[in-house]
Length: 639
Ligand SMILES: *[C@@H]1O[C@H](CO)[C@@H](O)[C@H](O)[C@H]1NC(C)=O
Ligand SMILES: *[C@@H]1O[C@H](CO)[C@@H](O)[C@H](O)[C@H]1NC(C)=O
Ligand SMILES: *[C@@H]1O[C@H](CO)[C@@H](O)[C@H](O)[C@H]1NC(C)=O
Ligand SMILES: *[C@@H]1O[C@H](CO)[C@@H](O)[C@H](O)[C@H]1NC(C)=O
Ligand SMILES: *[C@@H]1O[C@H](CO)[C@@H](O)[C@H](O)[C@H]1NC(C)=O
Ligand SMILES: *[C@@H]1O[C@H](CO)[C@@H](O)[C@H](O)[C@H]1NC(C)=O
Ligand SMILES: *[C@@H]1O[C@H](CO)[C@@H](O)[C@H](O)[C@H]1NC(C)=O
Ligand SMILES: *[C@@H]1O[C@H](CO)[C@@H](O)[C@H](O)[C@H]1NC(C)=O
Image (cartoon, rainbow, N blue to C red; front, side):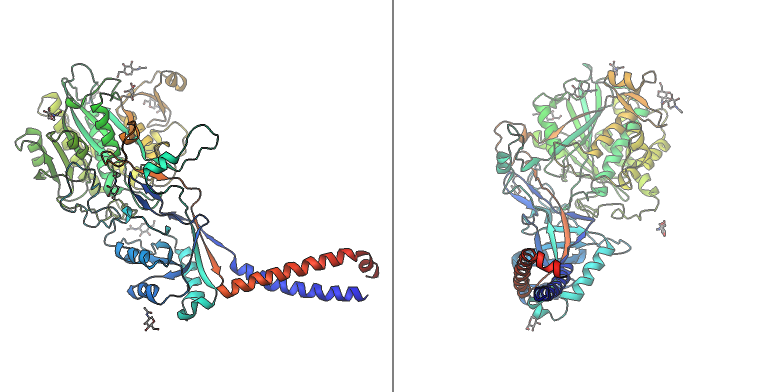
């Protein structure tokens, strides 16, 4: 009886203690925050860029920064660091991020886009003011991208995430107001609301050391720390490449864009406008039945151009090595290239022709200039793929057709805001004027090229309506959602396309980019030879392409469109000197998980108390269990 009483009391105490402890633990429970995108780490041959958390995740007390005073407070008056900064675009710039870095008191930065009507800030471009500064044919003498902050080209000592979720943001703000915002000079004495960011990157230092440390072979568990960036270029010759073809005009555009955060790479103004115009030019020339004799035209979409011209430098390297056989297996040599025309950033508004080595009285050039009412800028070298060609042959005639003169008009170059809204449209507004601007370029260029290769004054039956309809169908695939009729037609029957924008980031070379595949298939479908007599099995037997087709019933295509590798020569040449800066050396770090969660971080004193309390509870229960088991017969007999 005595024993029972005693154990009843201790049971009661134990329950009380557990209740108190459980309340604390519940308070401290983690609240995962989904729908975030992380900044990750990249390297070139000599440097490290981007962000990484610590291995177990970086925890920081939430500090919402809305104005200069909040930054100063962090620098001079804060006591409970390290902090995780929560801010929006108006405070997200190089100067303020540098101050966070120098404060040594920041463990993370969360960029939020809270504007309900999703109005973009007046400008935001994390790329350099001279994109691809070190890989052009000449030094960059004036900033092409005046909005460029170079945030992309910095090694940040803390993780950075982006979030566009009104609900999660208000939870973070609520927690901040409840625990952190009041009585700020005494923050260190109490529990505080904190964010944990997990984005640990395995690679460090530079591409050279991380590639050397990566072992792909031998053991089953390869240690890969980073991967070269790259994908595939897409090519299509207007006429067959045969022995009659003496020279080639190349029409090129880039296929990739960039941004600070993974997955969020829309590239609308940076890339899509030029890419769609190139596709439309090619398909229209095919529609016009242009026949070539000794002069051919090759359309090429080049990948990885945002990262020191990966695709174009590889193309030029292959041409120079006499190793470029993507056009029907026939060798194309560098000296066969007569000129290069690049479709750069395009859109509404006036057009500019940036030329090098072109005679101002060249017929094609002056026709383009007058028909597009474009301004001619001679010896102008915007950061574009033609730079790779000029690097190899500085007397090659090149034109870049763009919507900018000496400075980009795109205020969101290579950023997550370079989307439909960034182009000046709302998500459901009509793209009619953009369609008309792009189709004017595509139709004019195609008809000009038609007369150059056929030696006639132009196509007998021009059809600008065809081009407009085509562009009106192409644009939504790249600007609104990949779930569009053209991408469906260009996929194998029954393919489930995602109802979202496909990222335009080149990503690592060992995985194929969906946007490259869909674009390549689409070009193949619309320029290839349908083989109506072949079914699915016979089609794949002949190594032709089986796709849904425009009426979704399945069609076999014999295409001349083809891919070539867009991996930098730096990773192809044996013993390449990664420090030389001749070719792109970009690699991306491997990571395991990316995520963010909110928690209540106890004060230092509470943490000590919890530890003691925990130990006491554990000891008491241990003794109690031992006591109850050892006296079980007595206890339960008397009960
Ligand atoms: C890597 O980037 C840094 C900074 O942009 C630059 O100074 C350096 O020359 C680059 N290195 C190589 C090998 O391209
Ligand atoms: C920092 O603390 C000092 C002294 O308590 C105070 O005068 C100052 O206003 C504080 N600064 C900020 C940015 O809060
Ligand atoms: C191109 O050729 C096809 C078949 O030869 C013909 O049906 C079509 O009308 C031609 N297109 C044009 C624009 O001449
Ligand atoms: C595609 O390119 C490869 C070389 O990369 C070449 O062997 C093949 O013949 C090409 N196919 C076509 C249809 O041009
Ligand atoms: C450079 O291009 C020009 C124009 O196509 C050509 O005449 C010249 O031979 C080329 N130079 C070299 C070194 O290939
Ligand atoms: C877009 O559509 C939504 C409803 O789908 C409508 O509420 C909104 O006003 C539209 N915006 C514009 C600019 O048309
Ligand atoms: C689909 O188009 C092909 C030609 O591309 C045609 O032969 C076939 O009859 C069409 N099928 C349907 C159901 O319209
Ligand atoms: C595909 O087209 C090419 C010519 O462009 C031709 O040489 C080849 O035989 C065709 N392949 C098949 C399977 O029809």
